[in-house]
Length: 446
Image 1: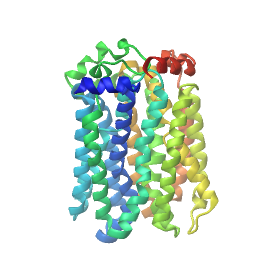
Image 2: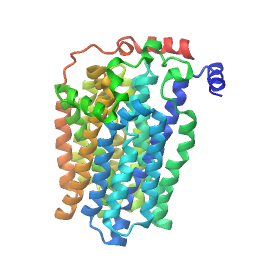
Image 3: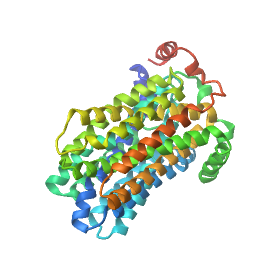
Image 4: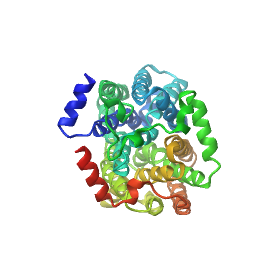
């Protein structure tokens, strides 16, 4: 059966790496469906249960923290048990946590289900999955593929927002929660069928590479003996080097200014100024649409431009846009708000491809595990902003201070990123002109 699939793919001149990338993209979108829920359902939960914004934000913060802290261990688990098993288990756990929310009656259940169950499930398919898939299956076009896969995870969160808002408005928040459960479950059969761990499992080489590129490095062998030990060892080794702290610090602020603040609190903030929830949700969906273009373009640029320069531009412009946001809120939708949404979409997770490229450059074969810890910092920043934004709203009656603080921190992230030293040569696939690499890959694999 497997050989027949391989023969069919070879006959059609489509390298299996693209099928693995496609199903990974769908898995990330399916898992991201739940992450569209909190921003829309804060107000419905307040109305039904009487919980404060801070209480609901605490559950969101736990989710985001675990979403990040799970990533480095998930990368190690993928080395030990395989990508397919980890992703299937993660999708099932996400679906379970989301589905059981329809029965909750107390805030601790919200923290248990939204926070712990869904946080662990989605964290197991976080950006460490992107790092693992691109690292194993691609040599050419790694930047482009990492951009596309990153867009899948981030865009899925935002594109589902109008659907969740519409379901909540027509049938209540429980129908929206069950809908996201169905989205995660729908991807499971495709993952079980098409996702493979390594190119040699299908008798091929990585896209644009050779058999040597599919060799398991000797220094990653301990993964098979203990995923937790390998994850902690990766942190211990990375923490001794300055680039890790600069990347992690920048990504902390990245998560704070996107997933932690804008994603859960933009809709309540807009609603505070009289904008309908469905309109605000639609605006975040537009962020998701432009996020695809921005992240794919960032991946393409990462293959050609110094990643530090890209991060300087991304963080700096993001900070400037957040300073301009508070006056844009109002009951009516103006072109200035649309312009902010379009820009923020282009910049949403454009930081991921250059950050991942710098991890590969400085940490080599351990890049997936190290990037998992960098991503953990991203989600700790998101958790900090998710809870802090709720506290600022409860204490001051407005989100304005939160937007200004986030803008200032983005400027600091820009300075941190550009100060990273380029003390190692870039990988061979990126030192050659990209058109030559791509042409060679196309000739070899179709």
